[in-house]
Image 1 (cartoon, helix red, strand yellow):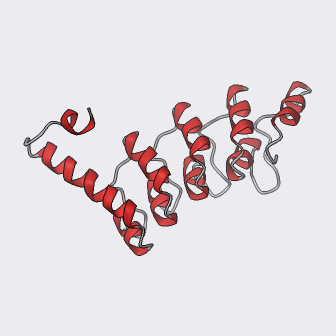
Image 2 (cartoon, one colour; image 1 turned 90 degrees about the vertical axis):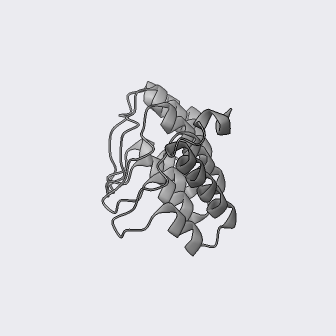
Image 3 (cartoon, helix red, strand yellow; image 1 turned 45 degrees about the horizontal axis):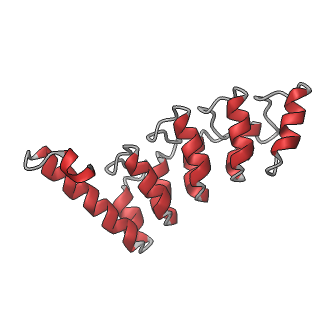
Length: 165
């Protein structure tokens, strides 16, 4: 699938299986997410494809969308109930992946949807460490801002509503 939503729709109308994996273990939805095909992803989800699917190596689709910087696909997955905290065997969440790859728009989307800025991967690295290693200053600043607000709220000095209203 390379973004041809009409072709995908025709195939589905004629009995193509939504969950049939290829030799690499990819379902049509995994392929659509990997290649950043928002229209095909939307179609497959609308037809009942499992948004909780993972790539063959158990990497959640949100992590793949974050790695490739596809905010549209990520938003579709999240709107279908996929958690921001899902991770593969390496512990990489979508936020960690977005920080590693310098995807500021994805970082902002995930934080707005409640992703934990304190989660760590299996190697023990957190979002801030990935952003600092990549010298992504706008992401580093955003993570510090979120952490500062959370600290003030937890200390009872401010309500979160003051910051987000």
